[in-house]
Image (cartoon, rainbow, N blue to C red; front, side, top):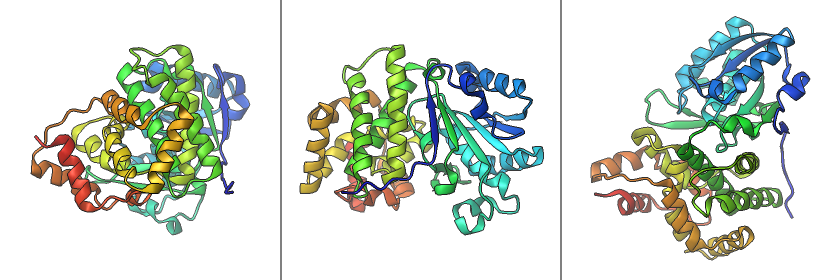
Length: 368
């Protein structure tokens, strides 16, 4: 039995949870709000947060420059802004990009003398990051429930993650109403991302009894909604997806992700494919390759039985929902695989891909 777990974030859920728990949001005297351009406002979350801050006499400043794939340099500059404002806590409102950005901004604001790339060296972060509140407006990354953030490097083509026990949000608010304004395909992509977290965690050599319970909870709830390939999501669907996404976010804090994640990064960075869809595009291959090992086959069969699916159904439905259609030549394939060929996630599966197999998967799926 392995019941080891570290989950330091307090999670409050339900419709109206921000306004109904104003004292929990007030972590200091000056808040630095981190969002994308418009999603936080459209969701209604920004208005709710500002209302709470104003009614409690908390000063705030708003940075709305988060990009879909957060740039390390943007976060570095925003960290300076937060420090100059005198912020003593950060509030992230948005999807995984905004919350990941906020994790970096919180670290940079508390460590003003470091360089941008020093964030990847825990020894250079002398001070703990500023306290962080996370309010997701999507149901995908689960970043509100773990301490990891993924940054786009200055070259604009590669990604690198940082994080640890000091980088978790202090508190996260899950209000499904904030996800209602998200478009259908974006919602599907987010659900695919959360499902990927759950399944890749279940198959991970780092899995524990806790992580596998969370994986089954998340994946079954997501699969029950996605298996019919819905054209729209009900309010109840969105509440279920939000909770499942959060559970899967906790899950990967224990185990990390498997090889669909690095394989998908290049599609997101170079081809604009949403992250969840980019992962799901490789799910047929993820299942097929892991079925080659006895351990992988047993885990996939166990996972499928527990969520009420078959491996064949997952191989068919998940890539179909992703709907990724690319036509690449050999040079394009080489460029994309070369960017992610050395990622550590490849080791986090029962079957470990060789470098040639990474190229072979890309050729099978995308060679014109």
